[in-house]
Every structure is written in C-alpha cells, then in structure tokens.
Amino acid sequence: MYQRVAVIALVGVVLGSTVAALPASGATGQTAAQAEADGIAPDAAPPNETGGVDTYAVSQNGDCVEVAAFGDGDDSVGDFYQYGSHSGLYSSQGTNEYQRWDESQLFLYDGDDGGSVVFVHGEAGSERGGGQASVTMTGLPDGAEWVVEDDNYDTRNDNFTVEDGRAHADWFWEENRTDGGALRGLERGDYEAITIDAGFNEDAHHASLRASLTVDTWRLRGADGEDYVLDRSEPVTIRPGSCTGTSTQVATNGSDAYAATARNVGDNATFDTALTTENASGVAVDQLAVAPPANQSWFQIDLRATTDSPVAGDGPEEPLLFVEPTSPQFDESPDRVQYFVSLDDAELADRGIRSENVALFQYRDGEWHRVSHLTRRGSGDHVIRSTNATGMGPLAVAVLQPDVRTQELSLSSDTVEPGEEFEVRATLVNEGPANSTYETELRMFDETVDRASVVVPPNEPRTVTFTQSVESPGTYTVEVGDATTEIRVEGDGGGSGDGGVSAPGSVPLTVVLAGALVAALVVAGVGYRSR
Image (cartoon, rainbow, N blue to C red; front, side):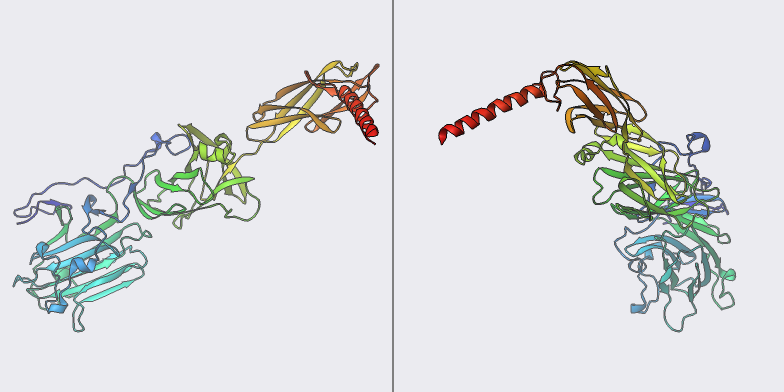
C-alpha cells in the first residue's frame, strides 16, 4: 500500500496517488517597515532552533516542502541502511518497507554521527527491477563523505567520489537487488544548501550497460509518513530548517560559547545565546540579532564570552564581560547588530554594582566606543538592548564610573566672630557617565570635621551645605573635595590661636582643650601625693 503522496513538481498524475500543490518557497522574515529606526525590531521572534536537524526544507522548481528526518540522533546511518554484504545480499536491509522495484527513494537521516542524505534504488527480493542511476551533489560542507556505499565490493560497477564540495555516485544494479548509499555531513554549519542533480535510466552514467530501464518514480520520504514525488529531470535543493522564515541550526550552546548557522535569512536573524562566564555573575548576553548585508541569505555566527579583553590596549575602566563575535561569511560587516543583555540586580548589588550604571561598549576602528542602549526594568532585573552597534567588533559590558568634583565653594560670610556659625556651600558636578552617591567631606585643620552623602547624577549640579563655627581667632582653610577657600575669625576668643571648630550640638574644641588641661593637673597631683 502506498502512503499518501504530495507532489513537489507537478509532473503529472501518479496512478493511485493523491496530487496536491505545495506552497512556494521563500522567506517570510521581518520587513523593513516592521523594523524600528535602528533597523532591528526590539521583540524579534526567537530563532527556530533545529539543533540536531530534524526537519529539512526540500525544494524543486520553486516549490518547497518540509520533510521530517528519519532517526533521532541515537543510531548511525549505517544502522538505518543495513547494507547486507555480510549475508551475500548486497542490498539495503534496513529500508525494506520503503523499497519499490521501479522507484528510487530519497531519505534524510539524523544519526549519532550527523545528518545524511540517503539513496535507495530498486527493491531487494522482488525478482524484478534493475537499472542505472547517477547523482551529483554540490554545495557540500567541508568533511562530507560517503559513509555507506552500496555496493562496496571490488568488482562493482558503482562509483563514489567527494572532492571540493562536490560528491558524485554512479550505480548499476540488477533485478532482485538495491543500490544506493549515504552521504554524511548535513549537520555541519558551513554551507547554505546542497543541490542534487540526478539522472536515471538513459540519463545515467551507466546507460550504455545492459539493464532494465525501470526507475519510473523518484520519491522523497519523510519520517512522519509523508512522501513526495520528485521530478526526475530537475535538481533538488536541501537545507536544514523550514521553508519559510529564518532557520537557525545551533552547533554549540555552552555557557561561554555559542555557534550557529542562520539560513533563509530575510531582514535579520536572532540567536538565543545566554552567554556568561566565570567571574561575571549577574551579567548574561541573552540574545544577538544580526541584520546581514544585502543578499546575504545565510551565515555562521560564533560567539565567545570571557572576562579578558579580546584586544590589546586600554578598554573600559571596569569591564564585567566581553563577547567576541566572528562570522566567516561576511565579506562586508553587517550594518546593524543588536545585543540583549540581562542584569541581575541582586547579584550585581552583592558586587557593589548598581544595574543603572552598567553600559555597553563596542570595539571598532581601533578603539572602544560606548553604545547607546534602551533599558527594560523588570522585577529584580534589567535588560539593556543596544541600539547603534555595527559590525562584528567585540562587545564589552562594563560599569560606568562617576567623576565628581567641586565646581564652586562659597561661605555665607568671609569673616565671623569666635563661636559664630557660618555656612559652607559646595556645588558638586558629576562629569562622568554614571550616577554617584558621593560622600562629601568638609575639612578644616587638616581633618574631616563634617560629612554628607549626596546623589549626583551626570551633568546635574548638586549643592550641599555645612554649618560650622570656630572658637579661636585666625584665618583658616576650608576644603570640600578639590576646592578650597578661607574663613577669617576676628575678635576675642578663648583659644591660643590653634583654632576651635564645632558643629551644631558639639562641644567646642577650646572647651575640650580646657578640660584636658584640668584632667592633666589632677593626674599630676595624684601622682605627686602617691610618692
């Protein structure tokens, strides 16, 4: 009994089968009209993570179907094919249920050693059949190889070759037998798609040999029971993923390393990365979105996270995490890339870091540039999204540093009497990029006499006021931060000229000195009487 059949290329009605038209292939990715002004939507759809590749897009004559691969990654393609040379049958014993004496079967297989394309011609044990077939595959990744050759004995008429991204095979089989093979390498990321050009019967390499011309149907089979009749005279293109939209095949997904291939890319591709590294607690690069150069329909991306700068020279002052991206397919750097970085408020607070003071930097043109970003505040976390990163330069997640100085220092009066209160007003300005909770100190007599804590945002002056008094006449230096001025105390005072200072509610220094003198005399008297 035949399975339900759909047809990729409408080459005619197959007897006893159902014919159905299929959707045309093409990307349905985000359009430019949907993108923000920075070129990439803030909520770009997550990638289709194909991982071990369980679905392939197979297209012919502009039509595309999504085919479920056989296998679940546990067994080898050799186990699936089961070439029976050991029993003298010289045929595939693992695909018997799919074989037809007048057909050639095409499978895709997900094995423990990678993804494979599998060919099986004819039917073992049918006492009918025999024929010739040839295939040429192009666009192959590096390392692709024939891992099953049916036949593989010395006197065979079959040929199997692989060289420079191109594979070829010729088959000649007799009745009651199969020929075929399996080419492995589809799990690799360094290719966009493979193309199969097939020839059967009189169009095969061995057409001059005497054999029945029995291949009437070229059939593509899926593990879900779907099968499709292919046009024997037209090439077939196969790539991992779906027919529409961007497909992402992840090769490496570790905590500090990520590698993937994006295919059928429209305006952009989004990768779920979740990158962090040791000693970078509280910081993770969750996603990367890339808008490739025009006409770049596929590319690989490789990301490495580290706490060491990937470039020589000075970098951001307090880096938390570096990410180094590479892509061998980009002849031109992408105009727009976008990083989504999550910050755990509690973990950063344990490190003495405020999430609001974390920013992004990108290395380009030989130096680090601060990258603009938007912030989404959540419950216990922040997510910052870059808006003007370009190219494939390294990224740094770093803590911004404040730079607070005293812009102006003034007194309510330049001259006061001993014990008279006066105000010290300091205007602070933060010329750094980070908010600062600044511990301001008022210094007199080479010591700190008062202090105040004040929040100083970038480029927003803040004024702090101290109230003081000095008990002894003289001229005294008043210092706040890097600014100084002088206060003159005139009139009779109880001090010796060393000066005394008191804050509201404190004991004047002159009183303390007098008390110390009395105490010294008492101690001296006690000591005298004890002798």
